[in-house]
Length: 492
Image (cartoon, one colour):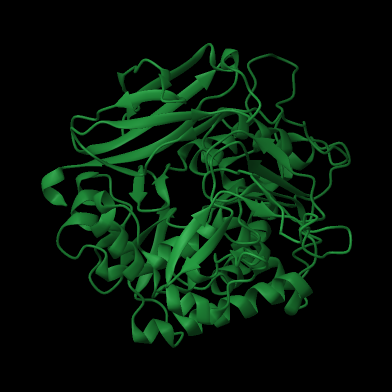
């Protein structure tokens, strides 16, 4: 990999001399048990995924124990950013971060880049404090290097390097918590930062988290979902992702999800209370993120609200709006108005940016926001922009992908392609679908798309138990992708 290189004599490289910090999302860091030395998350052997979720007790080492609940951390340590595809119920697939790390090759030297793996099980505030300290150390080390001195001379005003954070999903919350920690310590982290790029960050939480803590749903994924629920009920990091907006549909009214609600649906009441207090601190006391650009996934079917039915979470693909007075918008009969705002399949669009931020819309699934070529190009553009620029705007697109997160090998299922509600059938012309091995990205099938009882899509049968990557592409747009785990029916 060449950093800041140029093959044309006399042409300066289009690179930044700033220091870059890459912060992954939940489950995006490989973890190791320090007591045994064994990895507990982030394996190359994809067979481990089936064993962990369907047999044995492979997820138990990730559960928070009593020492960790009391703040005594260190049993588990983060070793690196995820390098291989992974999968978890509800959260679907986790793409590796090699493409995002490649995106930051627009720096003067590899020393300018800091990948920041973290123990995503722990509270966001804990990881934010660690990130603030690590970013300060990284900037100081880079500024003191000979490579920085050389690169600095190429900058128009020869200013010192500043920080640029590139954060995916939960990583954006960790980054925001880093600025909160720094502000509470009287640190100058905000002044030392030029830009923050967040990719699919759930600033106001995700309804999907409530579904995870509830653990119910289809029989085909019963055991993996139960194990995910049992794990998540112990993790402060998961509770920090609970929706922080009025999302519980009570018919004539809509209210927030409270700690008692969380306990009733399967979460931990105390962790929910602590998460709610943390979210309130973020709302009331955290300064704006410097130079913030929020890349937001749109057009993908996304849970936006929920109903609680005798302790069971019923996800809803509609959201509620406020009027100009900040009150719940209602129709003439006093019924709250419902609107499908979609999102990236995990985070609905209005929860993925802050009021002070102008969002950049991309028609991508949550995991692909850190991998897709269009998002990668945008990150590069922010890294190499002049100080006074805001970077290029990107279009919204209108192709959505609706697939299950887990299927049985050998059994057919329907892949659905979505478009805008008012689209006619001509909109779907030219859409192509391919199926790939998730580990190698080798194409193994090209299903024919067509109409099935009013839905546009394809009947899919994945023959072998493994992790697959589904790609759907339309015209010149970047493909929409999603990971799907196929399991042996005998494992259920």
